[in-house]
Image (cartoon, rainbow, N blue to C red; front, side):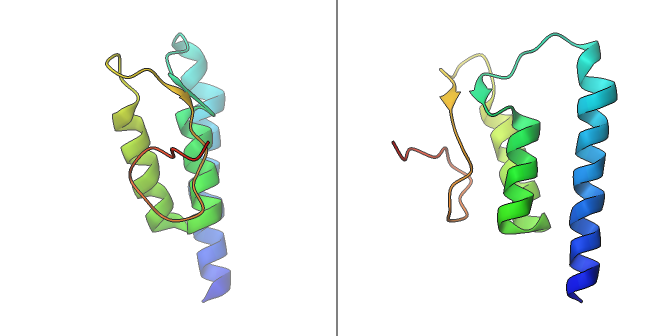
Length: 87
């Protein structure tokens, strides 16, 4: 079972890396956060698993809009869909 989870994690991360390499360069940089939303999703998947990591990545993308200030927002140790306010 662990081997299957590991392969799924690697597969999802591979898809995100393909996006970063082939699709993202076609558009100007617009992410308001550091790390970028795609890197945040990869880190979240590595730290919290594929399901929670994808959920965190989706909510991070939803937060990345012109109405927010942005800034540094690393993946928190505990699962949450809200911005990491640890300073």
